[in-house]
Image (cartoon, rainbow, N blue to C red; front, side, top):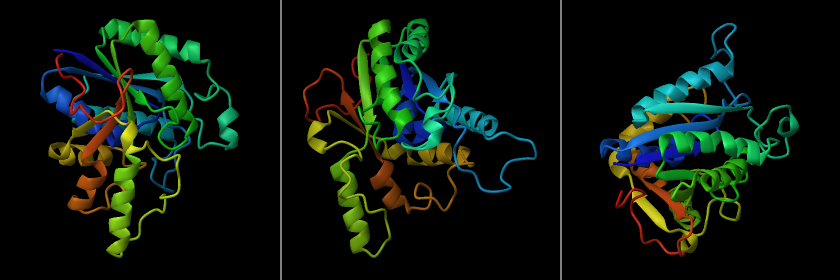
Length: 260
């Protein structure tokens, strides 16, 4: 059996991008470890949601542990950086943010976990963080360097299939459903031709929904994530997409742990 380490920027990212592959790996007997760079301090939360005196970061840590249990992770670690907020916000440059962290220092923290776990597989993000969030971009930079330092043999960059998403948006709009208009945004995801791996996780749709619900401070029942029909959810989240580092473009894999 192998060890999969899944590295993410904020609480809730894990269930959206890699929840299916994490639970699938756990069900197949592999060890799953979740590492999160920040505690999501600047996430938006509805007024009155938090208890009196409760800090959002503390709630999000608890939510992450609940999600991790659903996804089968046996260990959860936070690297200790502060949420940088969306690109261009003043919070980007606040003290101790992940965006301003030394890549070498942060990679050292992650590499120590990879070495301790003897990780066989690491998931990070693509080079633009999926949609340009500074902390997601930093996950790519830090994760790639950490894999070098630790000698992790197999690295996958989690992303969204831009073409698959556009097909879904177009179909939804044709059906009269209001969806975000991102068809012209080339920062969103990665073209299908550049992907190497597509993992069918439709069998884990209920697991992904449950993990998303664990992040109630950020993902409401009315959100794009949970407000969809089962069919729409399966289209949006039933396949998890990756670029295997060092592999030629072209989707030829359907699992991250084949042969391990």
